[in-house]
Image (tube, rainbow, N blue to C red; front, side, top):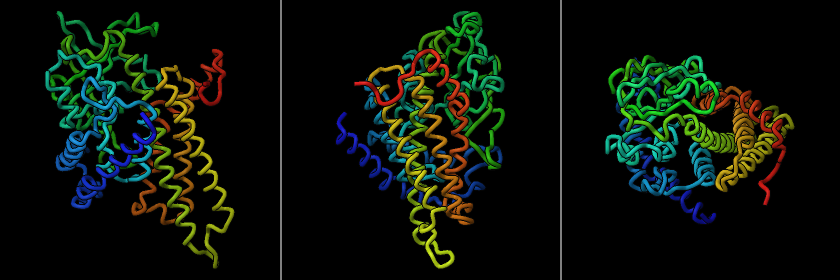
Length: 410
């Protein structure tokens, strides 16, 4: 895809958000901006808000934006990693934190059209793929468990044979989108010997959230919020058919790790986009806020931290684009993915920390939306692989002899 074609898509996404999403936000500010209205007493997002998100997804699917990263065989555009970074980065930069609806305009890899859907068997209920591609229904990603976070091979959820089918038993935790999803991708042990050798033995199943034996035990609420997007989901003798296997039996971890790689590019895009949003607002504020008779932007104590943010965002963006190009070229890039995820999310965190400091007391208010971006960044430094695990992965690859540092060799 040429740069001009990608620019056209970016402009199209922005136009869709401006013409379709923003009016919906404006008409529903009381619902979307007040947590007491947005979440029910059970911690789940209320039905009215879910309906608005569904409407955005479906209208975006009709316009061709929601399925940009689904394969062409499913009717999507089949765009790659450079496009994924560019489109998500531009959307987060344009819309900023503290908003919900704009980010439903693009299908996320864990919940919408993408890698997971490409591996769903046609033997599933025939409307599953259509429901997800159209935006009517969404999925969630059930890998993490109470005792298996960074060490994904330690999962205990089991799928035991039951005739020609299976029975699922176990618990998943930190399941983003879990409280309101229609389907969950469950990673379960099907061969413990293979799992212990880390060669396989884990299989992915796509399970309806309203199926027998499936329950949302609780909504995980972060930073003192009254509701949340994460859930603890349990399975008690949940029956699943062979047709519900996603990908190849015993090779679910390969599928999961491929998805996590996409998630790291996505989080880099989110961090760079939101970081740029925060930086621009900090510069504008520093140019109007007066103390002791001068603009605070005239003080090096303000200039230097914001200059640092600019340098770091440039580095994070350059790293992410290089890594995306590697992935689009089929080059194994485990070390680079870990570098990008750690550096971009830490840059994002520092960008908002500095922005709040520059804004002083105003930076702590909900009105400026800086706090939401800060909290998102703090979560992202742990989600999809903590900064410590990223450094561990980087060291492992360096020790194995992968000491190539820099732009992709030509």
